[in-house]
Length: 79
Image (cartoon, rainbow, N blue to C red; front, side, top):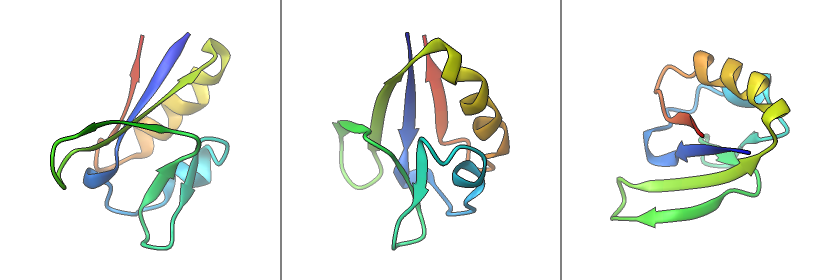
């Protein structure tokens, strides 16, 4: 299994991730993306809104495309 790690604070709201992978990313009312079913794992002030979500290995390919499309580099795959 792999894990998506998403830093919401770094998101600039381009929407590319949600256009590519709307199973894992949606644009919220404030214009930033949310990681669907993501769990907040680190709250170190307003600059560290880190969310993680375990995914199946077969989901990694589409997430990798979303990562490549993100100009803010706020999405990673762990594992």
